[in-house]
Amino acid sequence: MENFSDWLVQLLRERLPLHARVLAIVDENLAIEDSNVTLSGSHAIQLARDQLTPSEESRLLAVVRSANDSPADLQLYSERAHGFLSKAPIEPDKQAIARLWYKTFGTNCSLST
Image (cartoon, rainbow, N blue to C red; front, side, top):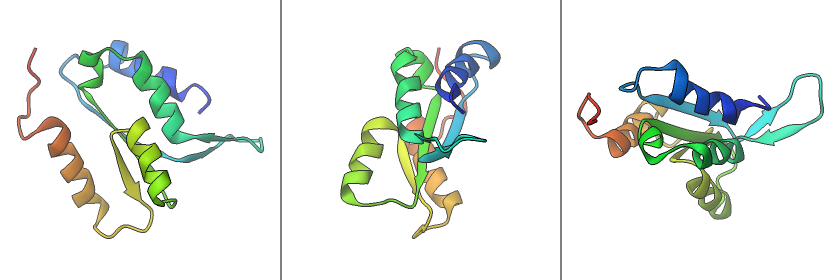
């Protein structure tokens, strides 16, 4: 997980076709195996977004999943990621993801080049 940001960038740049879209649902608290270290998922998303060109980012929907949903937390997530999923959802995840997907990509199934 320590290289998640680089992995996500490489996925968009090198491993997927240019028309492919990516949905990344990232937990806010990423625990590193065999360690007491926890990384911020929203920060990892921000690091990846900072490396992407606008064209590359237009193919990405990166969402933070967290139980922390205070106004300050939600503001931070909105600055770092494209959306937020609560671990105590008021709507089913499928509906929340669909809403974010259509908001980001619209209903067109193909990317404009």
